[in-house]
Picture: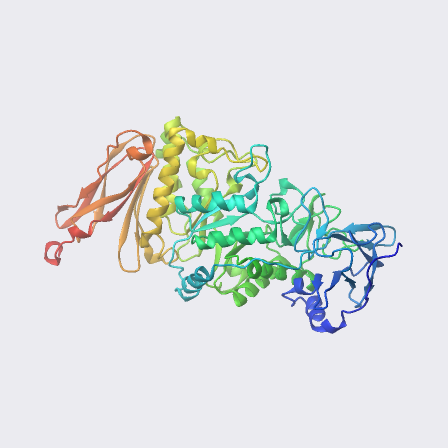
Length: 611
């Protein structure tokens, strides 16, 4: 080994006995402050890794011999290795490095599982980055978040409308390059404000080697992907969103990882992180029964929330075995105990996961999505023969998100608008009716990017959204409709205050291919929703009302000329009609369309007039 321009200071890890013990037992929630790279008060850097079955480890870096590296000392029987280097002529901060792990038959170069920054793909080295220098300016937002999410009643009586997105395909430079986090912020922040979304949900942003994994198969669980810039630039994106009043949710797959050679697979030449079950050449599965793996996964979640002010996490799993349920419970318990105002979203039934779920635990309602798409794929003319399908899945009192996600518009499932049958105009009409249904039905909301303007091409990860479609009139009108609908949702308490309270929803019509229901707010205010999924107009439907108000106005009509370019046959105001002591509205059921009605407060009747 060649002479190195610094001193190797050797075993300096025994003072962290508590951190080590907690790591092995599954209770270390801050692994990143011990493992990886830590800068010391004297200016030296300590490198640590965990490789329980390794015969030895070396640190290979820009400031060492890359082939053999600097030997690391084994400091615990549990397989923790450490070395300390002193910065001198060769700078340590910003240098590239890997660990060389020696097995019985061979050695391999591994990226640091606890690295906070990595080389830009396709390069695979970790990068020393101990000086996280971004200063957040979102204090007021965090105060509002705590007041809204912690102090609110358990029903989550606030609007939640999530824009799900894949950062790598939101937009690209003309030459195909990825934009930076800052460039994304410049476009995304005003767009979400314009469109009326409350949150953005990013597909996983952990460092990952394969674009086709969409980030769900990671190698760097503590490192924002360098595809779009530095950790500080990602922090700035979150800060910009917060200062615009928009929350940030991050997807997290805590059961699997990428099996690239430089990653977690066979990390110590055997299976430090992985279990026996394998899902293919690209997918590794964590051994969730190991305390060290539990510490690793929980620490990663808390690191992102604490360091980057993330407002929520969606935990993605496909299994419900005991070990998976246990790690999900550990993650939810850890996050909700340290950050009680952070949302936790799963696809696992709450009763299996928590017993009684924390107040900020939500579940994706996949059964609702399936029922809706099974129905929306029917020919509009044929829907009148399928009245049973109008009884969409609903579980009163459950804390659900109604998702129209990336899963529904990729991998051969076709784009949202192409799932529908009918003419060009009918396709847009059906999308408007679908969005109205989603935004007014009980549950919080999520929709994937591109849905809001009706992209015809199925979504792919390797090219930007077809924003040029907004040059076409119907796409531009659909986007206007979604924006108007979102803003109505934000300002209409009955559409969100009692999402999880059975008293907030009352169905008054299900017949043929029409559905009608009421949504109630906490103060008794109501919204009336009538949607026809039929392919043709039908006779006016009679909607019973209380008689407290003599006049009802249309909040939004999906068949409005604003959104169709053609005159609308429906009125914008309806008078209540009395018959034998009962009151009602007669509202035409226009094909593939819907309306929201609200009482005109100026038309309130005296009690004598309707008692």
